Length: 429
Image 1 (cartoon, rainbow, N blue to C red):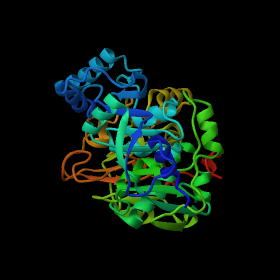
Image 2: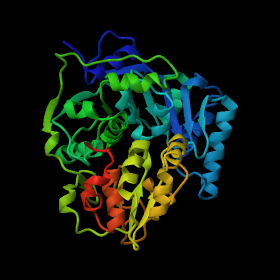
Image 3: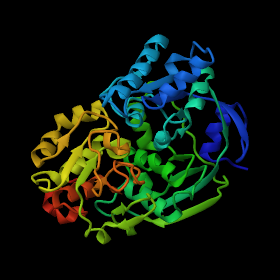
């Protein structure tokens, strides 16, 4: 019997010829990752048990991303603990404040590559499946074990396949495909499953948009999200990989728990209403909703392509006088390239606030907290009660074009309400 791409990666890392769904395995990892929120917990565990060395300082990544630049004394202490640990153990992949968000940095800099097995103390570690890695979030105790031993134990997940055929409409993106998926199966519809995406519409997506899809697999309960590498993936890796990669593909006779097939050409831009990512509605049914804030950024949609699309909408426009728009590039590299291309000028001239790279408002951390009763439309990944601020605030999730258009009109809006066809400048065919 054939194996899925996920099963093949896990089998190789477990030193086995084959693995089966439900099987418990111990696997060697290629990278362990933690951030300024989760690493201190792991560090304390290592110290508690007197473990004073890591398995390999070149296969650990520590990223200060969530509450930095430090928003208060506690945040500063957390960051200092991680910084001291990284210095003490000579951690190769240590990223200071302003370098960016781990789920953007690690693929962008070629630290994670196709075929890797990556565990991270952050639920959105599944992002790296967009380039054909098996990546999953684990707890800080598991990360402490992984940093000490270079191994992790896992239950092999069953795989689900999601096939999107057809061509996307203008202004529809990978964000809409994953919102559509979550809307169809629910926030627990893929509980502890490997979500595998394929089809014409997926192949047409950029690597950045594939990373967005994998990023939100966890919002359907998935253990991981994954897209098999193709020529776009190889091109992406060849320009940045810091190590060799391995391409895995699912066998034709691989077994899936379920296969969904959807016509992507029928999907319009979508909005997830509070308080679940599965509460999905077409933007055309959402235009009556006023917003106080628009946020463009996060590990989901703060990459260069996302900023280009948002700038295309905002160019020559002004943010609504009673709406604030916050733009946060997801990495320093993204920020610098956005500066070179004039995107930052477009945002500032439109009336946006542009911040140093950080998670910030996505998790209700800082740089854009919502007050009671306020509404935000966001390119981020979660909209649970209190996610972005006050428990009685509301977060709506959408792609960068929709968020930018909403910032201009002060209500949820389709980009076509703001951008004339002659202004598209080749962004969409």
